[in-house]
Image 1 (cartoon, rainbow, N blue to C red):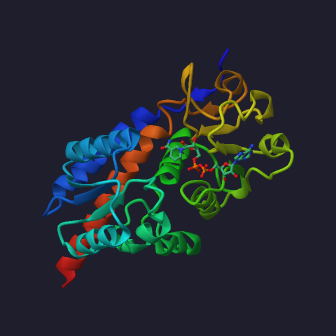
Image 2: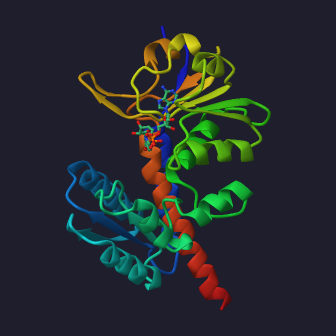
Length: 285
Ligand code: NAD
């Protein structure tokens, strides 16, 4: 029997998207999101299409730049330079992964940090680490919204993040630290993961391994956020043994319908933030 509250990421993201649409409507000019997709990976094409659809619903103009898989680095960097210079472009999203011959770190780094709506440039990672305003990575930013929705007490609480990727784990740990939690960041070499989890008032799993986090590892009443997306014969599942965890946690996100919907909403929010800053700069000039 489940005792945990189920954190409804779809509902939270819908509310956020409605609020973003209202703010977008108040801007002088519609924000513009440029999307870049290199190659024809079907999953990436689906992701980009759903991001563009969400833009349209929020009143954000999106312009798509599909490039052939054989595109060479200078051509891609040239496109990013053009978009950096284009005043109609508030945000630039280069869908990852890129084909193996393109160095994603070099490509991402070319994006103007103020248009880096994925929050992945060195400048934005540094701003986050130093507590300065900047564009934050979308998935961990969405998790912060879900934690607020669940009423999780972060100040002084024990937060455990499993996973240390640049995309999620590291920025997540920084955001929790900024919210005054005591943060432990676990990874593939962490010993006794179960003991780390057992201390967590807030437990966040982002590994990509179904059932890695056992229900028995969870501290009674903890808030559990499952970021993992794993396609199995039983459909889409997260990294947490959901049924068992829901019997002991205080609140838990489902997969699907938890973290996933928040990522796109936060991309829209970052595009709005960028467009609002441009408008303020124009007004001040
Ligand atoms: P990644 O592969 O870059 O990182 C995985 C991390 O897990 C690494 O830091 C690694 O050290 C750690 N790890 C691996 N095995 C482990 C183990 N046995 N014990 C503890 N840690 C272990 O992945 P990522 O990009 O951070 O994504 C992680 C998961 O989150 C994936 O399933 C991905 O699909 C999902 N994800 C979901 C969203 C979303 O919008 N919902 C966004 C980003 C990532």
